[in-house]
Image (cartoon, rainbow, N blue to C red):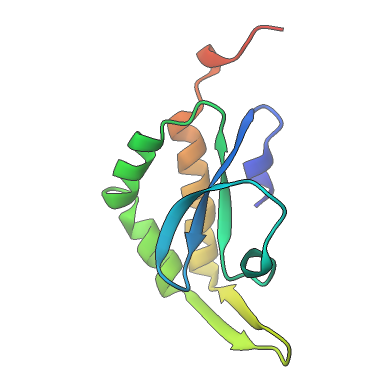
Length: 116
């Protein structure tokens, strides 16, 4: 998901954390990956510094809900001998990437960029 770290977009230090294990999402700080993220059991999507969380939350409950459903439905996990490891189907991975792009598109406004 390299597109999420586009150098043209200033990030806020926050993320939208998608948790397909519990089929939930939540706001989170962008910190080094925890065990869930490291093993593919949670997926953080970075937010631009001027993200409108109210608008994003509304869209997650409405027009973006099918993408979340695809992510949750395309998630599976297996024991690798040491840890539970999560995996997304190709369709779920595409939905996750589409959601990440939608968040950036929804909140990124070049007019808000400081002129250097």
